[in-house]
Image 1 (cartoon, one colour):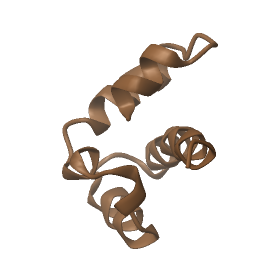
Image 2: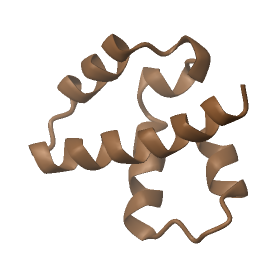
Image 3: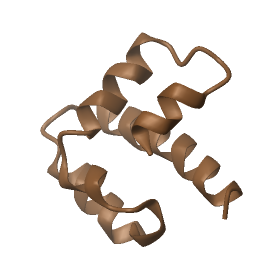
Amino acid sequence: MIDRYTEETIREIGRTKAQVLMAIKNYDIANMPCSSIKAKDIVEFLQSLTAKPQSGGNYASHQGAMFAIALDEQ
């Protein structure tokens, strides 16, 4: 979904968002189908980050944008 989102997004996503999405690809959650990801998976992923809380917020926000698109396509 990350690759598809970055390729198909109509607006330019910006450098920070692109960096965050590319970083997420290095985690197990990136290998899961969006339809199988539950809230607990997202919470566990965010808790596993060693970054500052505001960085975790960025990760959550940028993931949310992808999930919103995935839900619209179901």
